[in-house]
Length: 186
Image 1: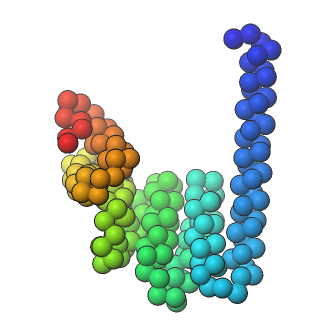
Image 2: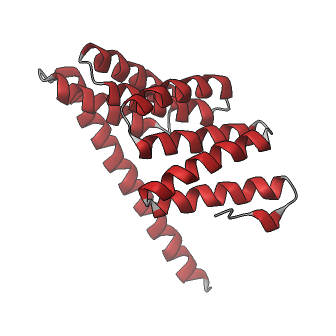
Image 3: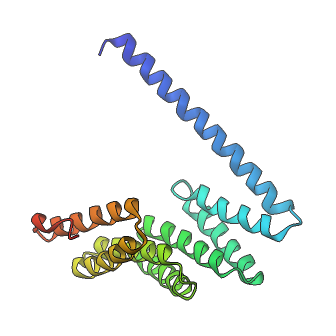
């Protein structure tokens, strides 16, 4: 690629990233304002959950902080689904920080709630996440068991994207077990 074209492409990419980051900052500022000033509990609750999600991947400590605030308010409002969503997001951040025991605890708590609510898609997602943790810890057979349970539920729900992700996870587990021909069990 010629020098000028490469520099234009690099400049365009850098400019795009800057714009996206500025938009994300504005969104976070707006959500923080809603979380701090809204008189409506349901709006504050949604803002706190979104703040936790927005900080995931960028600032795990803030994501976890807002996740716990979400859970506290959701419990006061008896919003069990949001409690489970908050636990899931906190678990995701703990997993990303390689704090697997903490992530596992959050996921197990969320799983219990999702099962009581018969939220099959959410149960499948948590089982998948538990499988990812087990794989990261080197417990490939446990990881495979979680992934297969997740896959069964995803098939039941006809969730093609979730099925694809879970099949990819199963494939990577079989690679780790030196058995790549087994990938894509279903």
